[in-house]
Structure formats: C-alpha cells, structure tokens
Amino acid sequence: MKKTATEFGEHQFDAIYPEGVQNHYWTCARNKIIANTLKRRGCLSGRILEVGCGKGIVVEYLRKRGFAVKGVDIANIVPRSAVREHVRTGIDAASLPHEERITYDTLLLLDVLEHLPTPENFLKQLCQDFPNVKCIVATVPARMELFSNWDELNGHYRRYDRNSVKKLVMDAGGCPRKITYFFHSLWLPARLSLLLKGGRAAKINPPHRRIAISLHHMLGLFFYAEYFLFPDLLPGTSLIFDICFPTSEKQL
Image (cartoon, rainbow, N blue to C red; front, top):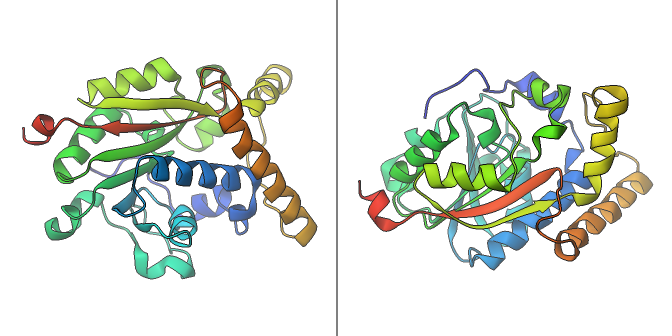
C-alpha cells in the first residue's frame, strides 16, 4: 500500500470534515449504520482497525459505544483530541508493527476504496498484511449517475453499485456477505440537483447552534430508520458491505 495522489492534507480534511461535522445528519446516520453492521457481524468483542480514518471521527464514535477500535491514516494530519492516543497519522497501515497487525480481526474501510485506481489490489494487500482479519466492513459512494464535482473535489475514481461492489470483492479474492444501499431518500434530490444545476455544493455546513444540532440528530435517526425500512435494492447515495476472505487466500 503506497501513497497516492488521492492522499489528503490538513486543508482538505478541514474543508470536507469541518469542525462540528460529527453532528451533521449524514455523519450521525452513517455512524449508527456502521455500528449496527459491526454488532451484526459480532465485532463488539474483537479488535478493529479503521484504515483511512482521517481525524478519527468514526473511531471516537465507536469507542464511546464499547468497540475496541483504533485508526490509522497515511495523511499527516492532527487527530481529534479525544482519540489522539488511538489514532496514528502519517503512516501506512502496512507499516504498523507485525505484532500489532496480527491482533486485528476486523478492518474498516469507510469511503476509502473510491479513492484508489486499483482497489482490488489494495484489498488483496490488506488481506496479506492483516492475516488474522475475518471481516472487512466498507462504505463507498453509490451510483455513477450521481458522479459530480463533489467526487472530483474528493479525488474519487468512481461511484459504485451493487454489481460493481460484488465484482470488486470477487476480483480481490473475497466473498461479499451483504451489500446494502443507504441514504435512499437522498438519491432523487441528488439526481435532480445534477440535472438542474449540473453540480452540488462543494462544502459541508455542519450545525453549530443547539437547536440545529438537535434537528440534524433527528434527521440522522430518520436515515438510520430508513436503512432498515427500505428495500436493500432501492438505490441510495451510499453503499455498505462486509467482506470475508477464505483462509487459503490469506496463506498465498
């Protein structure tokens, strides 16, 4: 795993993940969906590493809920103070000590794979570098018809659908266990925005006032409930899936 042109710097993280973004409805809903997926996969008692964790927003959320999770990011940025001892930046995940890498049984790749030109090779390498990992949980932006200036700003190579996720995982030698769209209700507004405006807002405006934070948390709960109530096949603006790798593949 080598550094690529998609590696973010401090100024890019500040623009895309500004202070207070942990209270934005999108972050609130995604964090809940990630936590639910980890619980469903029986990861509450395991050791988890988030690869490409940024400043540690998800690490902070999950640790508060009892998950033994740490984070690593190749970008040389300053982690959030609440998780500074649990997040390492400016280092490749493969460069972590072997004695540590073999202790992890779950990896998180949260909106990481879309930044890579050959994500299947990245997954294969992760499988070799973390030989005891039983499960990888990943999220990616969904639906190429929604590819926009936002994706270009973030250095995305592509957006995914269920078929392309399945192909990616199988090309990497893995088995996709569940592939589910979420943020279903955002698909139509995002599509209309592209058709009518040709793009979307190039920054996130997180809430700061107490009432706005409360409203965002309520909206996050709506999107979390929607994740369970809407059919898996109904398009959304994001996908979440988990991967297992056969033991034989890890021994190659």
